[in-house]
Length: 426
Image 1 (tube, one colour):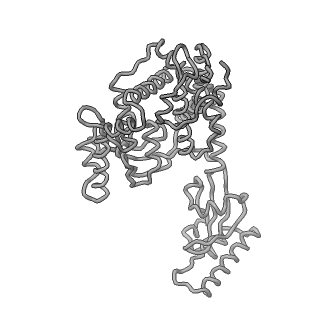
Image 2: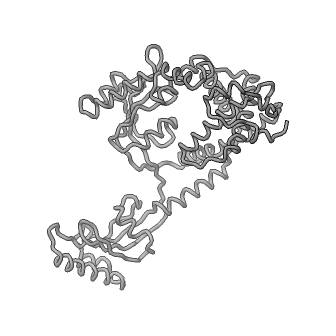
Image 3: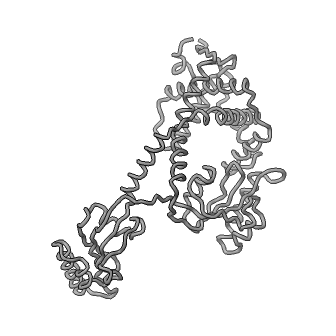
């Protein structure tokens, strides 16, 4: 019963190889539930695929087998705990998970079944695996969130950190601006003269002359009669060129930059931490189809893909299609979801939405509610209240603590299980 079997006696075969099943053996027992060598090899190969997709370096095969065995032991212990706790999953939920899996591979359910059989497994094993995943998910949702504790001290510190980050990344600034315009058809001689004019203005500013007077004498900009001042505002409301040129300046310093409009003398007049915290809000709309009955997930996905093609070809209107076909409460409003802050939608929806540029439509996306066709209309920076900021900090801290809390709980459950390691047959 030595642990040494985990790296040396587990056969490193590829999943789906029938020879594994023919010569299979038990490598561990968890509360009378066996774990076979075949299961460990299949899990190791899946783990390798995941690491490759994430572009992470895979451990040695021996280490992969060890990790896979330990994960399977923990899962068996959790499944036994779920059984004792009365956690169940309906056949309909397993069917929906099966449909989601098929749709993710752009397959029909029948094609998925054929693929599983061709790999040497069975539909029953596929469904049992999906059922186990759903049971573990429900067990986790029942036990882990309540164990996560976030204190007011942690929230306060998170808010201080956010404010410090905001001071560094998006402070309130005021710039003094002198613009020397370069006409579109200016030749090299003209440009040289205008550049010399800008450099003269820069020299006056550097030696401390009155900036308002310099602006009046040299500037072609709209701020000429306002002392050259552009007003105090968040840095992200200034042109990126100006922010980049002045971000390393001290208050009172000046610099010269060139743009397509001409030469700009910039003075950093004020810089301070922003007194207003903002978040990026998104204005989006969607069409939701809920698989069920005669509508499979694959069919729903294909239908929404056709809607996307028609919209982008100018043959259909998004809002009209939403009103006619969407199975969401937003349907009568043309699918319009209004302005929303981060965290308002389920993660799988937001992940797709956040990748879109304004005006762009995503490929059909699957969430726990169904299949969505998502379009982002516009984005904006919007202020949030201190209460909203605290809620965001609390949610972020809970998310960061979830994995650690899950691991501690899972190890606690495993600690109560009977685990026996077995050597390979000689």
